[in-house]
Length: 116
Image (cartoon, rainbow, N blue to C red; front, side, top):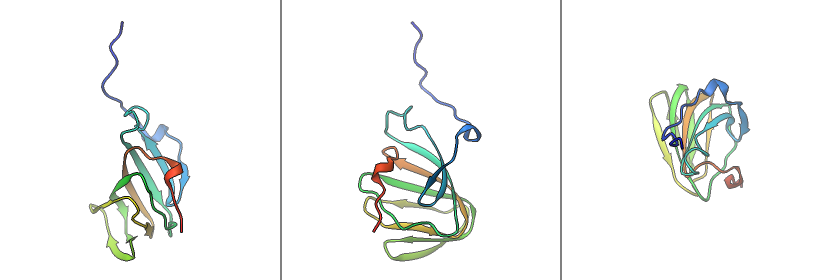
């Protein structure tokens, strides 16, 4: 009996982009981690939609572009190399054209996107 591999390699070029409140997202590792985490590369459009999550936290890492993050009413300028931890119930959105890595704990669930 073959032993199950304890790692997963993914080429994001092979993952179809799906719409999200921020723009378009390519998502990986939700299933292979047993739902514990998901890793996204997100192309953020000019003005993302304000939203929050009740059951997961997100970590954004800015790869490209410049703009602002609005988090719980505070507006912060962002640029490549910056990161932010967004906890449950924190209303957030991006303003400007950005490319980010988004790590979601536990794995992202589209049913856990809430809008005011």
